[in-house]
Image (cartoon, rainbow, N blue to C red; front, side, top):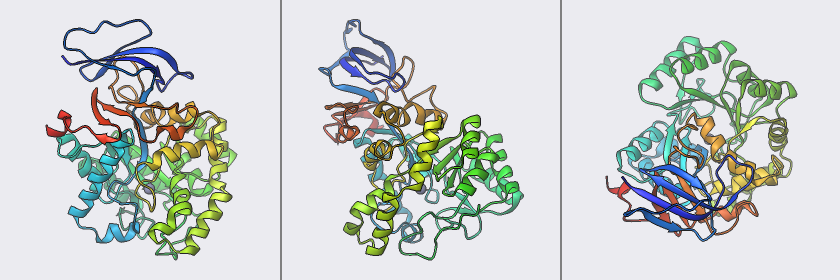
Amino acid sequence: MAELLVKNARLIDGISDKPRDSVNVLIRDGKFEAITEEQIEAGPGTKVVDLGGKTMLPGLFDCHAHLAWDGLTDIRLQSENDSTALAAMKSALNMRRYLETGVTTIRDLGVHWFGVEARNAMIGGTVPGPRILASGPPITTTGGHCWWCGVEADGPDGVRQMVRDLAKNGVDLVKVIATQASLGSFLFPGSASTPNPSFTDEELAALIGESHNLGRKVTAHATTPEGAHQVVVAGIDCIEHGTDFTDETIELMLQKGTFVVPTFSASWMQAHYGHEIGIPEAEIERRKKMIADPDRARGVARAAKAGVNMAVGTDQGSPCTPPAALINEMALHIEYGVVDDPMVVIKSATSQAAKLCGIDAFVGSVEPGLVADFVVVDQDPLADLRNLYSPAMVFADGEEIVRDGALVPENPLFFT
Ligand SMILES: [Zn+2]
């Protein structure tokens, strides 16, 4: 029986609206056992960590990641040209960076099958990394957005068979490309968006129905009001990126409990840092215009204010979007006016994200019985969410895995 006593924490538990001071947390065999302002006596052999009033919060989630992309070069070229070995090495580096950022769970939304392989490598102890829920390759129409990193399927029978094939090969969830690219790939400006949905209603009904039948949630890349409405009507669990939702769509999302993962980071990061990786000036200008007049942010903010479920995700792996962009993404939820309260954003990156993933009974908040994934930061994240950069300590399954921004080498998790 391994015990860890964390003393004198300022606790943000991921559920409550306010932090609690001077909290003591007992962790036993990788799970939170007791959380109290009362003193807890450390038994013989119990490891004790005194936080001296520093803030402790649940391990963060990035609900939209692409581990096999490096964030430096064009995503289509990488998807078409990278060898399996190179993609695996990029994935391993991003997994480490996630841990160093305090991210202990991600949803990998697909570059071919690499996310599933990364998950298996992490579970097997080959590579340190966050918990990974992997969609495998996204399902797109023939020639649809992301066909170069996904799988193409058409017709109700075709998409149903594809879902079965994905499930057979071990995906945790299913991703569908329901609309075209919002910006296009910067080396392929011809791939600009149309607002039209990509799949028919019948195809979506078959895809979502069969995924649910097989116990998998379904998330949709949906970047136009028309496409978002179609997938919400069809019963999608989550919308990636989002758009200027209509009032009718927002009403339906409320009724059905649909989530939105806004992914503001990629365009913001490209507008600010695109020149450093050689994005053409005209493309940087497009992104600057986009973030100066963010229709998408307005639509997402209207949905959030109406009470639609939000979770935080970056589109990590897109150009200029490394794992640490998660912290910037959280700050953008405030700066784009989606919500006013940093505590709500922390919930969207912890307990709400866990709910989206369907694992909230297991992880995502600091509560008795849940897996002890947590982060310790020196400065108050409620004063400025960017204080979450460079956490002082990160724990996964009750084990310290990051100290002062670097992996803890003696951690037994890495040598199983
Ligand atoms: Zn993406």
